[in-house]
Length: 286
Image (cartoon, rainbow, N blue to C red; front, side):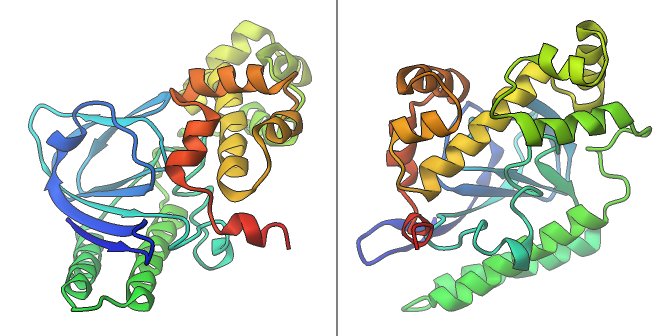
């Protein structure tokens, strides 16, 4: 395991070459995690979703997302992890555009498929990162540049992929409308029937169409959208749990905490403690 620590001993960036046995049981990492799998196939479980994949592929997960991989035969994997204080995808969203594409997107599958040419490029980048780690004093600037390039290339592949498995062969305009409505109203509309009414659909038809189009039920999508915003506020602001609960329209902080733990398997307090409040929390106050 090659890793970069802050002066205070906090984990910033790490690269580990192992195999998928490490991920055969559910696990939560406090960092953003990138899994480069050049070969093999299996099922990637990430929170609510289960996604079939076939290498070469890169899988992505956000801090403390519950993930594991099902495979009949373990395969090699390069695991690249980073903390927000080393590279904040929210702060660099205009340069890299990976937040909401590779990470933190409740609609897309959390991986990208690669061509052989892509594989060569990413292997070269990972080797460059490994070589920099071998230096007596690894350069944070160099490592940060390699990471940004890795994320930028991944985002580009995501954006250009015309055979993206996230998109059904036929576009469903009503489900695309639901996607927009959810982003607009997730703070106030928490029940599937609310959205079914806005879409002039029966609850049963709405649920079936959502499951077929997004591979998730409306309830799953609504809950994931709320949790996504909660994680962002917990990690990137210094608001109290009570203030976040109020901002997310929960009756009180205790109900919010129960909801958050039910979905993520960890309390809001523990999530904030394990991921470490980002330095971006201070910038957000300026």
